[in-house]
Image 1 (cartoon, rainbow, N blue to C red):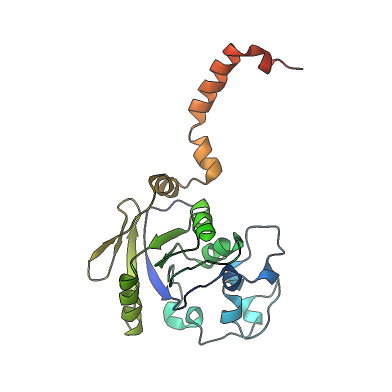
Image 2 (tube, rainbow, N blue to C red):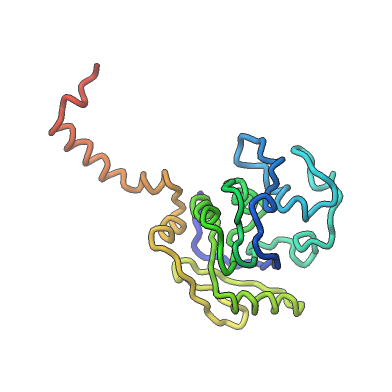
Length: 214
């Protein structure tokens, strides 16, 4: 997966609590056996006025111009600002794939659903938990008409606001390292390949009959 170190990006505000994974990527788009092709259907029921189907491009759809991601000032946004319990509902990993393919690199919210949170770390989308009062303040800043850009420093575990204020966030050490290195579960295992080979060599000496070709 793509490594995450430092990122500065435009913030798009999604001022809704309890956004579930069916709202992030509706069930009719889960027929694909690939991990790509979901970005055009991110928040499909909110972005469009018609009922979409697999294969239709945004240019073939009826755009809902009132939805935040369709507004000109948020084009190119790469940081999603959300409310509590983001990513609740079913465990579909496609929700994270859709957010990434659309162009988001991180989501900032007061809380996330557990399975969605785990899927974020497995795919390189950084979920940042900040206190609700900070989230409220960020939404208020966007509502005032200001273009909000934030800088995220994962190694330093800090979000820098336009004023220069640093807001620290917590993250488990193993998850942090995996994100910085760009390791998914397989990549994390392969990072121990030297130790694995050493064990196999010593194990073959202790129990050689296990390694005899049959």
